[in-house]
Image (cartoon, rainbow over all chains, first blue to last red; front, side, top):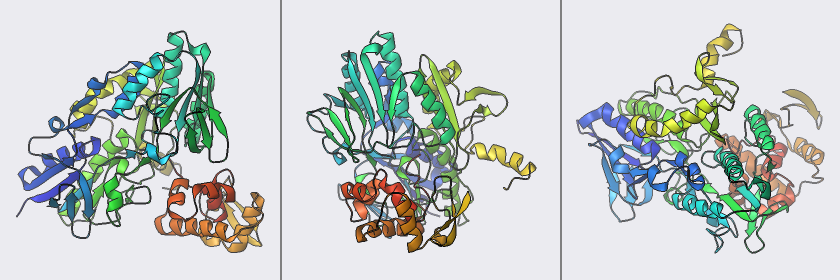
Length: 421
Length: 105
């Protein structure tokens, strides 16, 4: 039998995990090709630390090639479009690639140009972002010389990658300004289109309390319509205005441009309609989607991508073996939330269970407390980077941390109490 | 979840007043929900948005976000805010008898 032709678009977290797991599963009986436009794999959780001098840009970037097993091919190229009906990917160079299974792992792109006034001459001067490597490095310089005034963090629209990162940025800015003795001269405001600090009610209340304790003002339901860089003013669609001295914007996110060029593949924002449990694209039986590229209703976060990886690989195996897809993703996500002062908070949730207080990964023994600030959570967040490169990307399991979310733990308990399955 | 009377029919709603069963909805229910939320009369432009939201939800299981509405409904975002003050996606979903848009997690 010919080797299975598996094509993976994107060599980031999801593409790398899937490529390495599939390679271990199939060996020489699959030909696995990853396409990406460059050889720079960024450890995205590290971006948050760059503006505060807690990480250097070159510490968080490694070669994509070196994260992939030897047999996996990494092809440099720009995807022009996917022809789902014919199972062909066209590259911008004009060459075409046929596949038996396509895995889309292209993530989300930033689109500052979607917001009037955002990416003009003030971009990189009084308007910054920490969602790119260059942006985070430029913001570090801007914060260094920021002595007084109004620091505004603006979440322009959802969905965004790592929805807690803007909160973490506020917490770290508060800490950074305090340790430099400038906090009393700086006002910090978070603009969010959400009706609170976070979407899940219990976690949102906890986070709102923390923000208040730290003197960070939140402007909820603020949907940014445009930015006036000359007046240094943000306008919401419903005509509210906020003046800033330094604006840290989280630009609008969308799917990669090739999705929009591929008929029937994506939605209006370029994300890919995906079955939330099997992770198969609605557009085709032999197309699977992982990570930020999907439209599944959970956070766009590395932990999600990691948990999805295991499920997706099993379903690709089922598909190629002609079996029904047997693995089911439950929306499991967990995130460390840096709160400054060497502390962090941890949240754990899925499609059904919202983040609640407790312990992780063992519900009784922990050792990490959920939804509570602790030094241990901060140390765990720092310890995660080596784990990312050496355990997660090669596609190994992390002991005690599986793809099943908290509702899997409580299901037998609820059933025992006579609560519906 | 609670039951309430709207335009002479019993409908199930959540704590924020979003209908839980899109099948219990009709145009009179929509008009009453709109009035309760400060939209006195539903014009053709309102209906264009409401029907678009409902169709999207019934075919995809998800209501579009404001940005997606602005790109695909034929009504620009500025006008969406004039038609449905405060939160157009939320209010249009409520009037259209579909669950609160999750938008974002």
